[in-house]
Image (cartoon, rainbow, N blue to C red; front, side):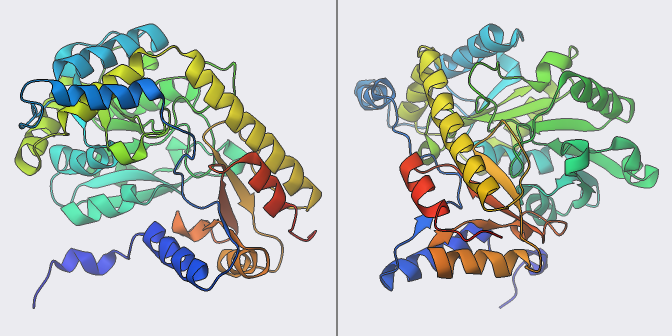
Length: 382
């Protein structure tokens, strides 16, 4: 039987492998703590859940939703961007997604021809690499390094690659490093892409997961002409990973192209979920601040323990990850296996995020602080 030969270049999704390992360990009776996947353990606000339920009483709730998303959610996103970021959006500059992952995948055929290049960071969320391959585009991986605060050095991208590139994907706050974008960087990369007719996309999944007291930052604050796209999700901010609801905002021409892809491959997200997402955006922002403080406490706790164990890490203040250096004389695979076998801790090997990360691993802070403290304290000093 013949299948798509592009799949030959794509491995099984790394979190599927980790989930299989986890299930086998549980079956064997091993006491474990999973600090691998970024799936928040915090509860969904009751008002969101109640809105989801009450929306099933609306007429036609079970019918196909509008491809571009219900107007109530789109206007809520517009209000959110205006009030939080000072960015003005129109309805044709907003598109509702079935989670941000769908938008990242579908923007490839919306923008790229077969053989076009897509510039992506390395390390990165590997969907940025696999989606171009699935659609016949070519990912070009730009190393991002701790000495440059995990921001890409644009001048290092070869000019022949730049000329063939249609899309540049960035991700700030960053997964896996927790690095943040800033005004100087955003202005630089917007200008870089505009001059070269490259569409810039920021995957802003962790936009609200920054140190408490800090205001979140949007790429669109520094793109006055709205030539770029920002893809967001309700998964991390509102603990709604299983709801599969997100959005794309920005350049109306790109949004329309993305909508054309969507209308041919899906029928939009279940309307009650969209109403629940709109409700989430209407909640008091103190709820978000409370969640941020919880992650602050977990982050500080984990950092202090790692320091005591002589495990180095990037001192980030965003996302809910800690990007750690593997101790001397270990590869990422060897050390992650040691954490599982000796201490019952599952983390994500650095090479899950790219070929420059064999000396790193990622800790996800999506478990209770008492569990994080209990398990990390078991680790020997290196």
